Amino acid sequence: MRLAIFSDIHANLEALEEAVACAERSNIQKYAVLGDTVGYGANPDECFKWAVQKASIYILGNHEKALIDLSIVEDFSSPAREAILWTRKIMAESLRRLVYDLPYLKIERGVTFAHGSPGEPEEFRYLFSFQDAAPSFKKMSGPICFVGHTHVPRCFCETEKSASYLKPGIVSLKKGERYILNPGSVGQPRDKDPRLSFGIFDDEKQTFEVIRLEYDNQKAAQKIRKAGLPAYLADRLL
Ligand code: ZN
Image (tube, rainbow, N blue to C red; front, top):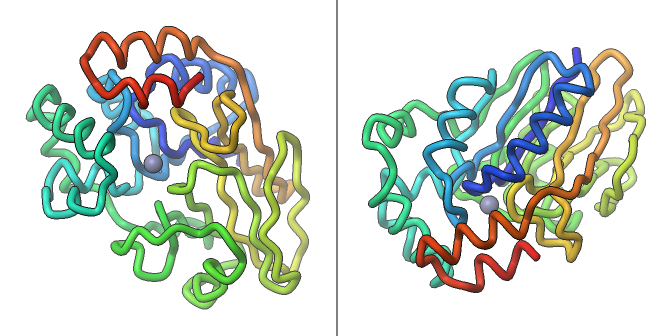
């Protein structure tokens, strides 16, 4: 089975549509969405609706959580807070209510899915270094876990004690090794590469591929400005 893994779409419809078109061309059978489909961008309803309808796995991110629990917003940066308050105002109530159904964690066919980390996923911890990720390996039931949240594609290996940045391309997953894999962000990359990022996991070949693609980021940025959201959020896409 080939699974497309999308994380941190962040209401960026231009990036989402480009990523979906590429995934469809790449013979994927299913989508897993690792959360933060809303926040920052100008099209929360469209992106959220897509994830609810199309993803067979959809994990709760901290930005979805903020739609149903405002206390979490206190930890947000000021542009993030402004964007989520705007999202709460414009998002359809019928969609917002669906956030209550999203899980913090899911394990399917031995593979773990979380937004920040598989250990205490409700804390939304960031995994940047191997030290950040080390406690998470103990919480995994199988050898593979997918996370998002940092917006940077990365591969953590347990026995190698490594945390390597993932360039576009295919990684072969070794038997006996345990991995935490981050596909990067569809809608707001933070690794100085403005191209959208997502992953494809092939469970028969045991490979993980990171795909980077250009998309109409000018249009996505223009929509953010037009919506009256902080200009920083538009500039961040370019
Ligand atoms: Zn995010």
